[in-house]
Image (cartoon, rainbow, N blue to C red; front, side):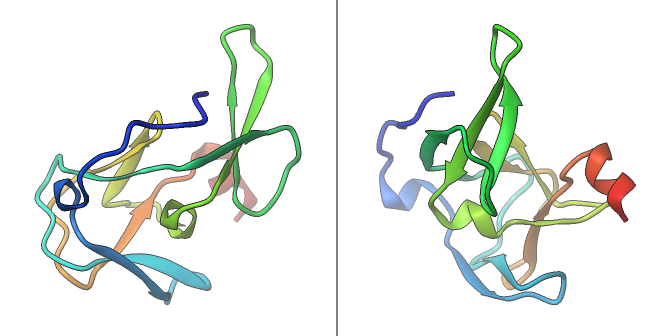
Length: 116
C-alpha cells in the first residue's frame, strides 16, 4: 500500500467533521449534502506491521498481510450493515446521496458481522 497520496485542493472534497456517534464512540459526519458516487475523502497514514485501533489490513501482491495506520478523520468511519459509503483502495466513496448531518458509514466486511 502506498504511504503517501498526492495532495488535493481542499475544495475538491466535501466537508466532513467528527463528533459523537450513536453507533460507536466518535463518527464521521457529512458537513454538506454529498451526492451519490462522490469521493468523500482519502485515507492518510503510514504502513505498519503492528495491530492497533486504527489499523486496517490487506493482502500484498505476494500474499502477505500489510497493515496501514490511519491518521486522518477516515479512522472515525463506523460500521453499518447498510452503509452509505465504501472504501475502494484508500478512497472513501458515497454509495448513495448522504444528507448534511448524516453519519458516514462503511461495511467492515463479513468477518466483522460474524463478531456480532
